[in-house]
Image (cartoon, rainbow, N blue to C red; front, top):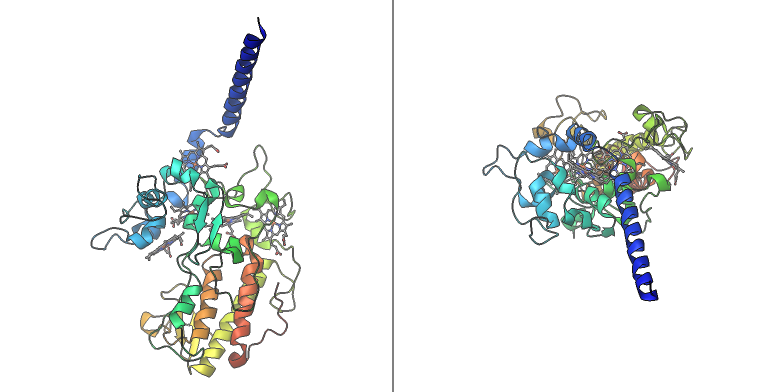
Length: 375
Ligand code: HEC
Ligand code: HEC
Ligand code: HEC
Ligand code: HEC
Ligand code: HEC
């Protein structure tokens, strides 16, 4: 064998070896049987064709999901958005189908795999790998705190706006919370600084490192009964323990007890609701309160007892005289309320927002931040 042929043989052997290594590594990645993936997926919220998220438009005429809403509420429209249907990427071109829950093809197309950036309703763009970008695209929220500024532009901070209604970022906007100031979807007060993405720890720093993308539950550790969290949080053995994690050991809400951060956030929410109520009484002349079991969530607290009772939680009693200052603080309340996992996605960010909202209402509400801690 001459030298040239020897080199060719070497190159062929190297290519075969590389091919074999690539093949076996793919086999390792695809270790999970497809049956298991499917059954996990079918029991997840994404597959729940009966849920409000996929049936909300069924009685409309025409019965379709409007272009503005379709990206996240219809499988076909998500494919349209990423350009998997051959249309321009980054926009939805046609209304979505009803009863069309998120299926395999939403996340598994060449276009979805290649998706490497997400634009939040604030206009901020974040780059992320394809598998996290898909999650972030739908869990980014629908409107940002900056839309409150647009709504109240030129108005006096403390002048009630007749016919106004509660504003919020929408639902399960986990990515907006997780990315913090990098996404800037909350109402961020001028002159304050806010934390960015919650880095947590490197085994749990992205959506798909924590969530199994098919069951949507937190991932199992292969061949182990231990929880993904227990290696670092020894008190956690399962779902029921997540809300008892306490790392910061700070009494943020100033109630005299150091509690897990979940409870500290709940404590701050109670104070913000009280501040909104006292502010409204002082400035607008009526009480204010939330009731999240009844739409549209914000009601007049007629007897100013700090509770929204059954007779008050009715549509005609909705609160509709927000001042700009109230709209901002209430937006932040919604930002936390409608993302129940905020305490694990980015606790410091939501604590900062709650603190600043209480502070901004303070001069008129009399509810001050004395005793509270801003992370
Ligand atoms: C950026 C993605 C996104 C967009 C755009 C979006 N939604 Fe949603 N929406 C969600 C997510 C995520 C949920 C899941 C929350 C849940 O199940 O409670 C949701 C839930 C809902 C629900 C169910 C709420 C419940 O209490 O179960 C309704 C109704 C809804 N959206 C209406 C709309 C409407 C109307 C629009 C357009 C104006 C819209 N959505 C646009 C992401 C989005
Ligand atoms: C919400 C998005 C989403 C949906 C819906 C979805 N997948 Fe996946 N899938 C992913 C992501 C993200 C990964 C990468 C997983 C990882 O990094 O471990 C993945 C990985 C896979 C893999 C590679 C094996 C593995 O464990 O890494 C297969 C096969 C697969 N999915 C099949 C399916 C099938 C079949 C369906 C429908 C029954 C489906 N997927 C639905 C997001 C999704
Ligand atoms: C095409 C839009 C879309 C994509 C992509 C998407 N989601 Fe969702 N997600 C939704 C909607 C809508 C709901 C609410 C479903 C319902 O109410 O049944 C939801 C619900 C959830 C829930 C709550 C599940 C439950 O049973 O209550 C989790 C957790 C979740 N998604 C995580 C993820 C993760 C992780 C990814 C990426 C692997 C992802 N989502 C990708 C739209 C999406
Ligand atoms: C540190 C692990 C971790 C990371 C990282 C993480 N999640 Fe979660 N997520 C959880 C846990 C735990 C819950 C359930 C918490 C509970 O019910 O108390 C949850 C709940 C959710 C829910 C349903 C409830 C809610 O408040 O929205 C959605 C949707 C969701 N996550 C999406 C995402 C997305 C999208 C990302 C990436 C931007 C992400 N998660 C990153 C651990 C994580
Ligand atoms: C590799 C180690 C590690 C893993 C795994 C881990 N965490 Fe953490 N966790 C930490 C560290 C470190 C902090 C403190 C981070 C900081 O404040 O910057 C933390 C903070 C938290 C906090 C905020 C606590 C506070 O008082 O501010 C919550 C809640 C939390 N983790 C829940 C979880 C859950 C739920 C899981 C599993 C899905 C998990 N963690 C997995 C290391 C980990």
